[in-house]
Length: 321
Image (cartoon, rainbow, N blue to C red):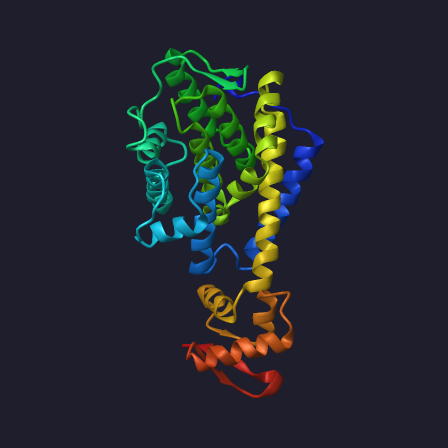
């Protein structure tokens, strides 16, 4: 990797603090069995992701309507909005098929996401573009003939093993928005690709709807992009996005601590491959659990024929069937 190709940004105290906090929370997510969320919660979070990412682009469909489309029900709404959602559902259902470091995958995802919405779906733009807000020209994108080379450099940067995944995902998101490689769909592609980059190291991001927080702080999102443009570095955008990621993880931890069910805990525990254990072993995995709740969980596991018990009282051992 040539040093000059690395996109410019500064590591600030705020960035260091956020990375430290995010790493702790990811550790907590993994320790608290949350990277394997229940199918119901995964479905809810995917709906939130699609709803928020498209709402930022002006889509009018509600979470209920998106749920209906996922369940193959008919929905009444603007044809374009329905098509945007159907396209997004297909993309998010096949996330594992896209390779985050491949520009071919990137174009394939854009084709699927924008299919039927623009003629040049899956192709880099062939004309100059500028972003206008009101009467102001906010951003003049690089000339269209430079786009393939700039994107190639950006995908090379993604292969740099010395860069932290958290930083890499934010830098890619910002630089891609700056290059503005497509005539339409750049915003949703930036958010989708950040998810893919993060997923490669942290599986929890497949179902973590950080787009919800972006959609709630849209002004800040666009402001951080504009300020980064002015400074010629992605630093401010990195700070903003890491803040969004940290808050999303915090919400996930708070939400799961409230609603995680005994069956979710039991299924997670059995996936660890333990063949024989005590109540204390079970509680060591679920550190916030009271001994009464642990006993209830284990009783439920016995009723469901997941394991059998030998011994009495404190000496009880559970053998997985």
